[in-house]
Image 1 (cartoon, rainbow, N blue to C red):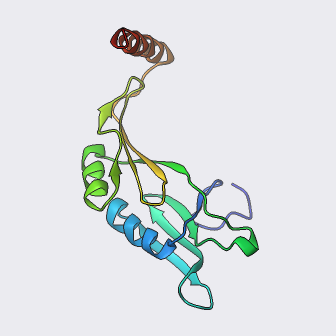
Image 2 (tube, rainbow, N blue to C red):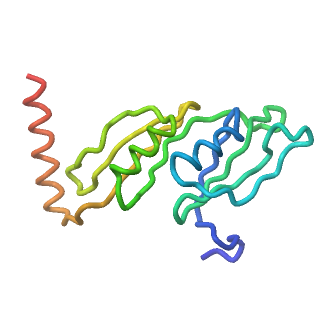
Length: 153
């Protein structure tokens, strides 16, 4: 671990610049069970210069756009691994997330679902159902591609 790594963070920490960071934090709490770790408001108290939330064992930084400081809104895609993807998907949709892919078993051994938030960020929710060898994964991938191609005919 790098010596300069703050306690509780990982080497890579995603950061979202969202127009409406206060609302986004409230949504992430409701949709994903996020815990707010810290918040530094701008002098107006209406916008966030820097905030940190924790989802599971991971931290995500958030802030409002401040174009004059080079902080423009961005759109990201993030994955959340959870014990129960079906329940996580329902919770996120019930909280106002837009349903994308409903929970589906994937060839690589994960059960996966997708939602998007009102700021355009994509969230993939996943549960590892089984660990596969590279050979098993390749066989399943080949089967999935074949089924997909046959379905297009």
